[in-house]
Length: 433
Ligand SMILES: NC(=O)c1ccc[n+]([C@@H]2O[C@H](COP(=O)([O-])OP(=O)(O)OC[C@H]3O[C@@H](n4cnc5c(N)ncnc54)[C@H](O)[C@@H]3O)[C@@H](O)[C@H]2O)c1
Ligand SMILES: N[C@H](CO)Cc1c[nH]c[nH+]1
Ligand SMILES: [Zn+2]
Image (cartoon, rainbow, N blue to C red; front, side, top):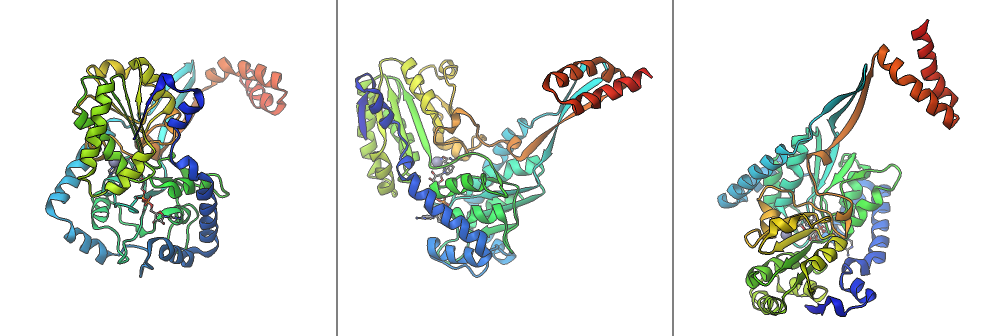
């Protein structure tokens, strides 16, 4: 990993240090995804099968998971994993249910009541990655809020394995959350199928879920096409930033950095510290722990594009972090709760030495589908609200129209919109008659 001293860098070097690995490949990915999306729109199921063969090395007998495959999957998942999935699901349910948005209603004038009510999005498409590793935890993170929101039509796509089946633990997690419509589809083709529909895959109103840069780019493209599907957020290759002080535990910090580096060669991990000896100890620990990782090669490639940054003050560290807006931010600090106030942009924050990011990935209860690529500056991770629309309502009685009607008439006149003015003025006249 590169080690840099922030104050010694010029503006261009600073930007280069924090440049995400995916930015370099964006144009090629964009063009490849355009081709795949067009192929699915034109060729439907037949194109999907061909793309499975091309990118996943298998042409599944059926795109949709049938009852037999669900039954075999449940039987194949070991009891300890079934229990862990269930325990994680319970905590995710507790946290997400506590955050349900409440409808509200308020009188803004005598006889005028304004309200906000919520409705589930009808057709939702969930994407569960399985390219370099199947992620059953992601099935929980998507399907639990969808169920709490009350979405009636839920479709889930996940890449097929080489034998043409879906990962059993992903299927078990889907079933645990009541999702039965599962398709063995990965990458951009899965996103296109859910956005536009095919003979077998239902068209969805909004698409959710993380994925590699092909998945993320496909979501971006279908959200801008005609007809378009809504999307949750850019939730691409994983990122973690750790801000550590001299008292941090270098073994823990190294493990946290590696836990995201192992996701993919395009993951980004960054350490910012005020202490040069802590940074050196973390670098040593990374080498020691890397050698023991089965996914050493992937992690090494991610680390090659990642950085350890030495700063003079924690205020400087937070300025960098807020600008970068990491998906995950670990505060390996002595007073993490105090420093939380300084965080303005991050997907999810982990306070103190005993809050590894891996807990949020699996089972603390928060959602691990989080904005990447700097999108945490303007959007948030998944919640039940992501699966709902909010509808505003106004109820106006006669005295309400009398009270606020003249205000509307005046504004309509100023905007030169006479039909607007009339819609109100006619009623005011009717009240007076
Ligand atoms: N931001 C978040 O909330 C979050 C959460 C979980 C995981 N993630 C990230 O999700 C990603 C999962 O990626 P993954 O690759 O393991 O699984 P994936 O399921 O996202 O992607 C696999 C699919 O990519 C497609 N693909 C692969 N190479 C291609 C190519 N050259 N051209 C076109 N399509 C191609 C294939 O169709 C394949 O099925 C990781 O980067 C992980 O860090 C992010
Ligand atoms: N760290 C990922 C989000 O960036 C989520 C995940 C799933 N499984 C393990 N980790
Ligand atoms: Zn993870």
